[in-house]
Length: 271
Image (tube, rainbow, N blue to C red; front, side, top):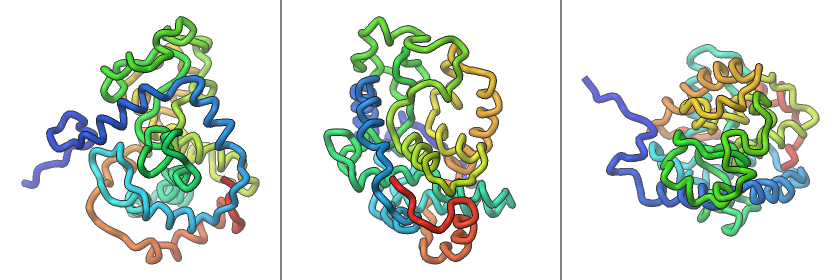
């Protein structure tokens, strides 16, 4: 019997030094101030880019934070979408699988300094956490939590930090990355009719310390139990479909184009 593949084993001997270094930089640099600056810098929605053009750009990006896959990121998107399609799930969910990492096109106008470039990805990819409150041990490599300057600030280093108990995860600031970026871009996209479930999948799929680690119970609100079910449903396609199978984007566009036009319209998306 073939050995079952283990995903997200960050302590495995073959996990690259680059993965660990990525998370060290992410934990050190992703502060309240940094996240607020990235919101101001990147959420201007002034860069028109066609959906398929954006997808093609992900042929040029390998996610350095991923211990499981070293293929261009567009391959992971197609793998996720095709698995959702094979299971007969709704067309909007197939499209969500296809685009859920598309916020990584940030690297086109990113910078090393911000951690949003091909060389420095700590502001773009990886498991996210809440900024403005204590970092939980369910973060990848929790030993790096102490490097975050906010953890020395009494405003930010308690379980609630700057938030109110039960405020809900829609009302906290997460570490800056591709999830929040794509969520905000699509939220601003006037012809976006994706259902709320799709937007939840897009916004929170990298929020592992919560949806897989069980952290932030003090912050959770009424909606978050339903959100958790949505994310865990999506996670089986985001995580467990990773393989070395390679697709050609041009071979699947004809199937997904009408679905994309149904939910996103035909014009460019403003990034």
